[in-house]
Image 1 (cartoon, protein in one colour):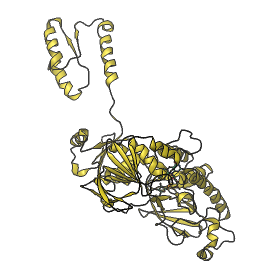
Image 2 (cartoon, helix red, strand yellow):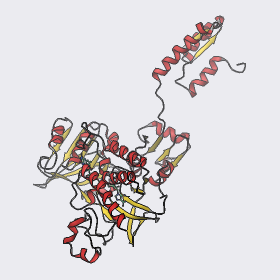
Image 3 (cartoon, helix red, strand yellow):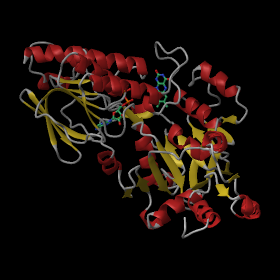
Image 4 (spheres, rainbow, N blue to C red):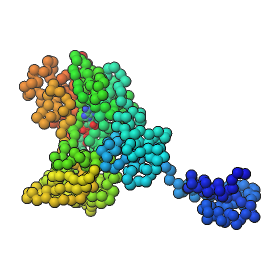
Length: 489
Ligand SMILES: Cc1cc2nc3c(=O)[nH]c(=O)nc-3n(C[C@H](O)[C@H](O)[C@H](O)COP(=O)(O)OP(=O)(O)OC[C@H]3O[C@@H](n4cnc5c(N)ncnc54)[C@H](O)[C@@H]3O)c2cc1C
């Protein structure tokens, strides 16, 4: 290197690759310079000229240094990097979408992780454009919505065929089971999901009672296995895409999606499940996604490290959420209106909760107001008996207070019960309006709605059991009835 001295070179290299080992090859007469360089450039080793034979004098030294480097080297995360504000609903939606669709990503909170600002500076980007998604190939998306992100990571958002044998709406356990059976039995099957596969079960940290998994399995694992299985059988999967309407046109069902596009199928299975009930306390809408979350215990657990977390609800989903969050949070308080959990939660979960030191169960209290500046900071809690109130600091609130069927999008032609669940099979025979709508000689099949060829399965169906196993069972059964229906048209 005639244009630069060795020590100067190492000084420059140190700025670019601070973790690289530094070795100086020096002449015997330059030993003093080498010793000085140990301090100046944190030299790891200096070699004396000549290095012959290299197998004795050069390679062993370099091998040792490389071994040492390898032991301390932690490779940079390869994959999607998401930079944003912790308390931003848009960031939360992207985290939820990536986690739900089982895409590994690394989250960088701009306020607490200096690497986040480094990433922005490196790409000459401004905080105004957050959240920003960085990809492995060096490209990025500024403040994308889940659909734009989905298109970028290669998820399917447009249907490939003009006509399907069966379209399944909703990829919870029921829809996934229907898809696996539809695909495996040779039907041209399309599965449409508005968020991410797994449905409610996908948000569960541990399902302990699903047959065949004695140690339990997480909802994410169950959905991952199921979607892989469905794809193997040739099922087409559209996500995120929401179905807004179904029209019945003779033997064809025409589905309208959120983006206005239409899909035609001979039969439809509705597996849209249920959605969380909204907490009626004041201020909740202001902080949803910014400290207040419906379900989502798994997506946001990491951000609750050493924080004060509240869980509202006394059912199994609240219990599972609290147990999971307790591994991260400083303290988890379960708030319920009843005196205790005994009438609403399985005893195995109550035992688990009692054995965890940082979970407290507070009975006979409810949240009436949520306050904060840009994100949740305080709860106003009321005693349900004497109505006295007090304030508590809270970093996050997870709401699990029951569910309502996702059927608002259906028109009046499908008969639903008083609570909005879709009615099927013989239950329909008792409905006055059914006689006017049903024109076939036969009775509706067990899971058939009042429109021939449209079926409902899982939690969305009136009389469903609200269990993963029963949802899966009904999804599989629905395909049996689809076959019978297709045979008659
Ligand atoms: C946290 C939690 C823990 C649970 N733990 C257990 C347990 O341990 N054991 C157990 O047996 N059960 C458990 N359950 C209950 C179980 O998860 C449900 O009974 C089951 O998920 C119901 O499945 P489903 O397919 O009928 O509906 P869902 O799981 O509700 O899935 C419906 C899907 O449809 C999608 N969708 C809705 N509308 C549309 C639309 N218009 N277009 C496209 N897609 C749409 C939704 O995004 C969703 O993915 C738990 C539930 C929760 C919330």
